[in-house]
Image: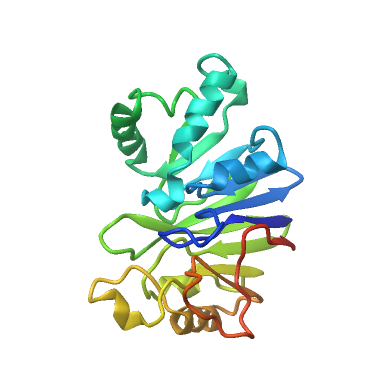
Length: 244
């Protein structure tokens, strides 16, 4: 399995960096996890137009899904209208997410704009689904008041856990239990900087969850360039590729 960091910025972009987007590839398919601003042009640098079988979105903060909008316009104009069903990537969003995207469509263009380019599907909490040949288990995690999920992604005997955005939670260790790679956000310098309603982690909190999980490798992500990271801790950067 190949894991590629397309973008890993926090809610504001690090210099020259795209927002959240991670590409997982194996023999059965290619899965893009999250698609924030800047991810689409980075993918287009790799190939003329992204060739993915599925996209899975953790939550509806703009830095995790925003490039789906230009993706729609690009796909429609490139093919002079709605994309043929056989060429549409599956787009996985949480339960109720289709209605959210229809509301976005009413504001940005057409109510069904995302349905013209993607096959929109909904996942349910804790229930495995299959995307691009990967088994994906979505676990609900705390992120302020917004419905948000982390993903446990498995194929070919390899498991990658991705926190998405999350405040401290025992479910992070459950998400990453015995995984081969735990991609965990670490946005904060200190947990107390987040206020009483938590939505992000500090490095110490991320590493504590990783230690509890027994994961074999930790990759911190979604970290502002303004903050230092301990030199012995692996940190994501745009273009990083990992073979598992």
